Length: 162
Length: 162
Image (cartoon, rainbow over all chains, first blue to last red):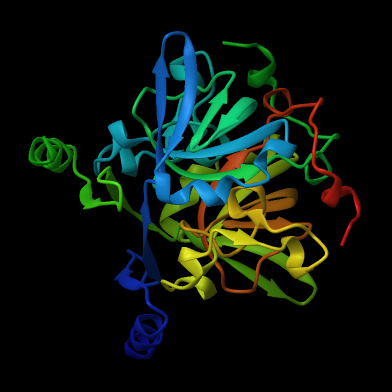
């Protein structure tokens, strides 16, 4: 059965590893499409030139989701962290990484919603982003308010602001 | 100079390819942490057992971002698409993939905001998700309303609903 899964998964183009409990995990490759740049008081996403056609129409949106890679944490230790004290504050309860925005997590994908200031050729100037300079960018997605929830509930530790 | 970049990037653990315009691109590996399951009228995210500690505290949130992989599109053709007619409707203007939620894009990362119904062990029941059954899940992030924008603007084609 495992052998069958293995061949099926290979047929669909993924690579296969087997987790501790015997469930197959699949691996996929992502690559940078551009970079976070910070200079002269400006924050920009500089896309590789070849991806510039992908920006067409983004100027109709005020906000963009930026998906990027926590590349400074790309090691087995940081990728095996499953629980943290949010914001590094021991007063905050030990919490699963999937219930936080922790930069240490199994897949180092970061998500930030950013206000667009200007788009020129392959460069998007944004208001701000909580990412280090030269961070690899993986994807951009438009922010569509009706996809988002207006009636969301969050835990108490989040309302304390530390 | 390119050689220097090459060695620097290798030192930081990425693999390197060079784009058409000579800028180095970096590649990273992501792996499934679980799967989208649909059965008996229920939609669930079934996490691999070993990641269950990462869910601790997610029950304090009403909504979760699910990041998953458009695995049915994982081929060079779909990953080279840079412009589409949104929702496959030719009446919608040809638009860059980074200005749409198109499932054909350079990195096949999908993002959906989902309402949590119940969390039990390694299984999260959600209200709904626009993903096919057995889709690989890459990450979960809590939805935090104050990170989101209340004053967002979108293009005209989005208000038409088709």
